[in-house]
Length: 194
Image (cartoon, rainbow, N blue to C red; front, top):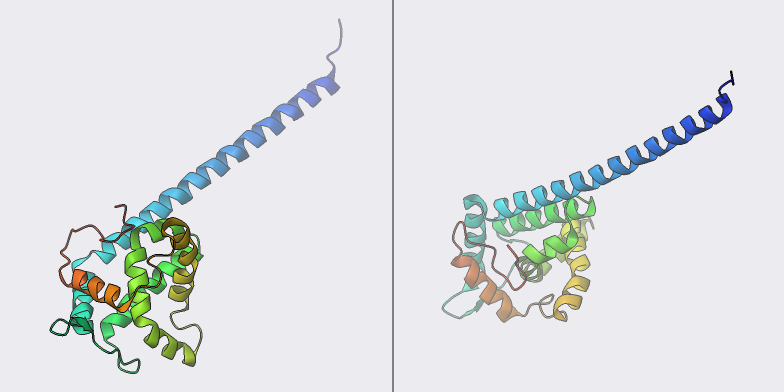
């Protein structure tokens, strides 16, 4: 009777274990990618719900009411040392979006697609407040600033940069739209996909 070739059996077993390990690693990587993508979608949906919530809608409308002079059909002058609290709250929301993008919890292109019109108009309007705050420390509204700057190349590529530096009239029109926003409405903007 011929003895089994233990060296060959060991080699085949080792190869099979290695293949099984590689398959397990590939499977785990695919699952992790799917989990991360699902988490990004969930984070985006959460931010959309927050943006459209009655509480945040009231903040947006209140800011719009304070920023526009409907009789003169223009924006009111913004005092960077006495800005509306609602502006700070909206900038905090922008900061939160920026942090989630920088940590990979949100996809930058998705944020651009959903929020860019709001972000570009708000950021352009709030620049005096942001610049004044950043004199005290560059971290003030830093995530928001980084987010808006990082979306400018996307805006340039997708729309030839048409909306990344809105004029005063664009911002006035934006705030008029905000005044008329209703709960449950989709986010309005040239880029909104939801």
